[in-house]
Image (cartoon, rainbow, N blue to C red):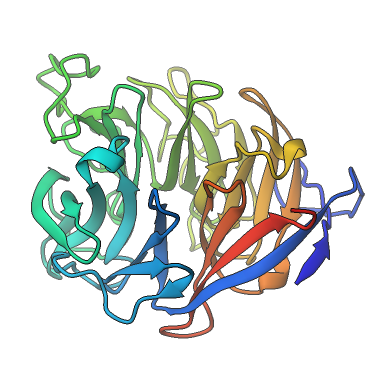
Length: 373
């Protein structure tokens, strides 16, 4: 399918009053790579061009030479598949070509006591071997929701992991003595780095990197700007794009641009001293899940821009970026017509999108490439 790029620019505070205005002439081709994936959640690109995709229902799937392999990857531990829980993100070690290490985030436990866990294992081409736990969020909770679960590596090979607020435990996001509503930083093996901000604070868990988060389902380190970008689900309104820095309080639930699902106010404050403001926020909520900072040759006009998938409106939002400064926004790829879970920049410079499909086992991987390439 070939498409001229359709533009709709969005006001700073949300998705209100859309108007189509052409900004530049460019074409893209949207291609279905594979289908038949059960609730795809995360994707990683192997050095040989193959792909690994997680299914929320607990399987890790291999796409080899453009074909979805019939058997899931063996050796993946069982996850707690309920509500929003299951097998979530996937991330390759920066030195994967040499050590074959794959990192997975998943919900574990049962209805009465469950939490987020990060594991790693060596991928031998068909199975995951030598699996070990890298991180487990504390305490457990009794809600199958708001796990966070996205991961990114920093240049020093330490790992950032988003941990959600469990939906019913939002006040704990202001408490550094637990992992609820935080971003944590651990070493590649799971140890606490000596330079973590709260490592010497007896009132905080040493893994905590930042806090005051609701449910962050995307995080990415961008080497081009030496910046960690993160998106976060708001309640009814108040979805956020943030720049993540250590030892910072991002405010939830003390400050928010959203309201409760009941229509009641969560907080009278949208800002407060000592709490970070988002780079952007959206009202109404669009359900930000996956994100990439585009760094590739296929679409030079998009270099450095942020792309965010929408679970609510079934499209991708492009945020025009000038370094760490955000600008105009653009709606793209709404012709897919399905909930979009993740987006990544492939090694070929194309964008790859995970869509959930219209039913169980109907998820897809899409490729967006420049038409003239």
